[in-house]
Image (cartoon, rainbow, N blue to C red; front, side):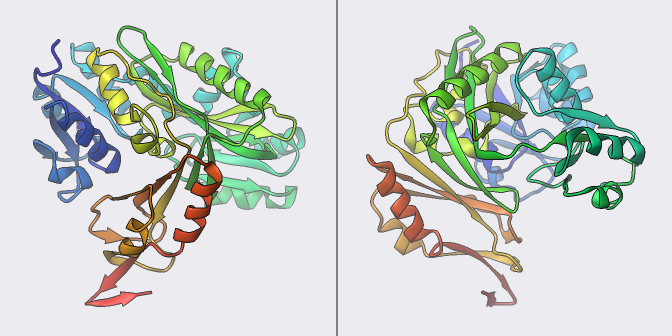
Length: 391
């Protein structure tokens, strides 16, 4: 199809959907979104906004009927409904079959293991007794996880000792929801690779990024990752190997751990554009969002080469602070050369909610990091209630 025909449907109208639309408008593309929030970030620039739940079959059908192609910006969707839509002839990228696999962390780990992709040891947990056995096998600490629905650390519990086993089990539902246990990797760095595959099977791999978290939420991404050559080669090879076995077209994120011996393990896969790839908007020749559109539209893929070393900082809602969002520190930020500010337009801020991000590019990574250290505490998203700012 010509890229000018029809409209692209996006399930989700958050910041990822908004940035995807921003890139698509450069090509004159039209976009429909499905999101339950009338004031979601993408609503201001979408051509059509269907207000509804991601689990509402009628709303998903409505989106499919007015869209040439469907994609999605996050994983918490009814994958079975998408499989049905795909079977009836609608184009959905990445494949809903891959989405269904990814949604269950245990099945995702089985997929990795069956394809000889290194990942931490794991097991399904169906009872408290099985969790005690996992502790004997993996040692402590170990991770207890919800198989479905967790994100940004929600749904994970670090079990520090045998004495914490029952507490962890109860905290994650006491067996009312499917669980898995995973051996704890004492990693020295978390990295990720944004990888892309087009309908013509062309592939691109972005530079490995170094990710730093706060309260299990991504805070800072540093590119290129400060790895040894050996670890960098392993990370790239594992990312490509994982992509080779995944079904579907589009951009994927492969999250990995690197330990002290430069062993690399896949942690999780995201079948979509990803927070750790935001640096690519200013840091690479082709952003992850432009690349995703090229993938699903059958266009030649762009270069994923890094133009400048880059550091991305998430702007999170302040702890114990919520209300009408107000961004402070804008003038100080924009006075810095090579700094790019993105504010997503969410009306309300909540503690640790992703409200925007800053990317700093520089020919010298150390200088970019210095600028990051200077500006991090100066730009904040504060909440206002009744006209009063809550510092």
